[in-house]
Length: 244
Length: 244
DNA sequence: AAGTGTGAAGTCTTTCACAGCT
DNA sequence: AGCTGTGAAAGACTTCACACTT
Image (cartoon, rainbow over all chains, first blue to last red; front, side, top):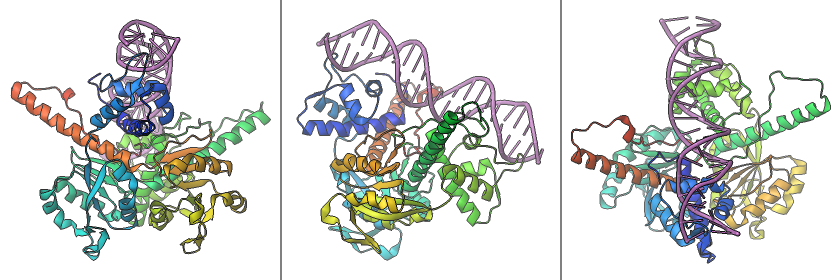
């Protein structure tokens, strides 16, 4: 257990471990080793142990980790013991899909209200018991029921404006589905969900991999002809994180 | 221009730069400095120059970068000059939202077909001119029109199965909306879009930030005159990547 | 015997700082 | 004078390897 700075990637992985622990628990598995769990999460076992070591000692040497205890510990570290409340901003197709997405409530997130900046959409029934409110009403809403998380799926050109108002109302974490990078004050966190960037990086990986294969073929075919100009060899990496 | 290994994060950032360059181009801006562009993308200017330096020299000293030339160069590096074809696997709410999402075609991605493993959904008209086909038909489909990218939004327990079959049919890049980590052979890339993991990390950031504030208050109360060096305060980091 | 916990080593990434060009 | 391009330094993260515990 150290006091060192904790890598952002560690937090992401804890969340992944947590999910696999839930599965093990459901299957009635009582104990798991770092080896087993790491294999499921696609990480190095030492990585897993190191990740945990930032926060304490959770295992038993020679045995492994109690599934239920570790699950609890991780949930506690992440701060996700109780259900968390989220507001949704935006009413487009993405917003509609998100609210129907069972994954959120399975992970303990509950949408308490839907807002929009576009007056056109205000008043419509969005889901059962969820009527779209105008963003102006958020500040009153948070007085009644404090919320700190917002999922934002509005057009790119309104994102900064929306973010500013969310922060003003006390929101401290924003999950942003628009590609626009937004500016927020210290103490507020933002995560981006940006599909096309990820597709671009897949595209890059594919074309890089092809180039490599060609080069290898060339090298094998024409061994003495050392062609070392602008082209170079890049290792193929399978990207595993969302980080990206 | 080096022949070093290129960080995955660099590729992600290139994609971000590209987007801001498009905006600048649309506004008629001819030249941009690393400072300006970096500010928009929320990165350090040296980072931006270093990112570009992996691939060549694109700027003019004392002046900056030509917006249109740099945009072209980056598109070329990423391999996203022409329109790319994608297949969609899955027909749930997320899949439906994705196909309606204008962001994809704006970035040059085109959905050529929709597949599902669940026979229930096969045959239904998904979007105009897009009828859901069974995954069995994918191998024939790719013979007609080769595709290398797939967006997968099927239930978690089917994801590995779907991925295996996609790879068999020649797919080389998978954008996976299910939280399940999947195994693919070398040469195939996977990116994950995992909403709840990102929410978990926001939750963690929020509670960490609160704890810090409390500690600082305590410290101030206990040692009111002590000036701490810069070492004790963890900056709250705004995460920029999908690495997460 | 088996598997954790962790310093230390190794690797990767970012930032600095300034030489070099226009 | 201004801004890029880049080695070198700093910093962050991952992996190794083994002491230690049950």
